Length: 375
Figure (cartoon, rainbow, N blue to C red):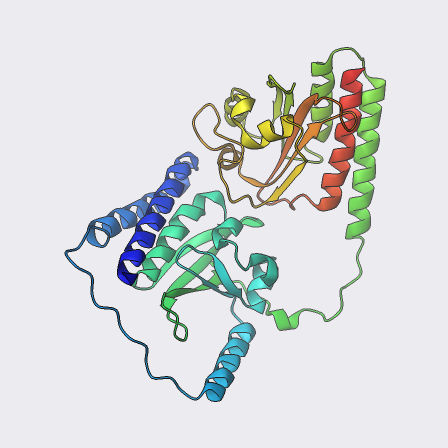
């Protein structure tokens, strides 16, 4: 019975990985070899491992237990060694979900261990690398040997990162855990976490961000008050131009509520802009929810690649625009009043994710835009 359940879980995991591979069709041509390599691994796996066998092997029993105190001390020692390793190391399960992240890995990735635990490690990688990484992790977890591949972190997509994957069976756990080692491919030195200063170094970053938000609010107010009134669609287009570039890499503006109309799409890639502009906003789950009067949505490293639906080419919008964080806000003049439209903003790789303060600022500007559209 246990092996039957394991087979069912393995099959379900295979189906999820194939779905993720399908979403990788829209990646850049240069990244396709890694995706193709992952697809070949999956085909080999389904042919050799998942084809129904006449019977399953017998389950093995547990090994004799040891002294509980000595075993607990050994586990504490191993945890301390893991945390103090100078190399960035993560422990992930067969679905690439992070179980542990050591100090060096938090410094290297810029992600806190508490935030990363329980989330897929693929969420911190560039979209083009996710399917290949998932497939290689699954292969190692199945016992098919160690693997290695080059990936890119979303926060620094121009620096290749070499990953080495090896399978472990910690303690008495029933399933294999995958030990993942991360290193810059150019052999640059990784500063260990212990080298970080014990106290934060004062800087003006927070003050600068606050001043930038104040300037953005001022620019939006001047645009809304100084421009012509009367045409809600034109007001929405002008507001989108204020937000594009200085605040977001992509701005998508949809007018209406019951019948959404895509008014403006501003982005970096002309072909992608055309395909996203041709999308029916009603097929975008987050936009449709906002149009029904939902709360503003802030997503960092979104895991659901179809949260904004597919563009006219059939590719997920989040993959096509290389989205690392997004804000989706309804345009509501005041509580209880009808929605005037929806604003969706993206930031791509290499740019800091939207913060809670920025989300609050955009929510305020959305109310001002809605008031101008209603007048």
